[in-house]
Length: 105
Image (cartoon, rainbow, N blue to C red):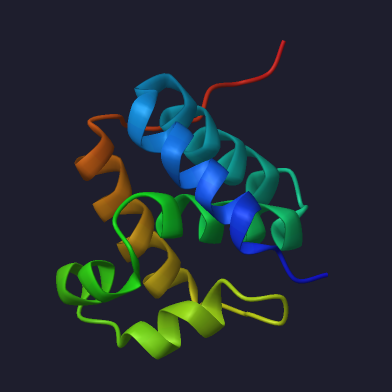
């Protein structure tokens, strides 16, 4: 289902206003992908990118063409591990966070 402009604008405005919301979006996307729900994780990551850095700037930072990035995080996307980790490394750096794996109890 296509998102309306209003929904995207709402996400963007909240992300610009609330750093905790931005970090939560990024964390949720990573956690979903690690738990096996990569489709939802990619969708949330796409929302995060649109609300923060944008695909053109992410393209410059990662040396991955913007159109390729948009396809990677689209509904039928299939990013390579190399490209996905390059994107995540940049987003973590930009957000000032780092993700670490820890054993479940």
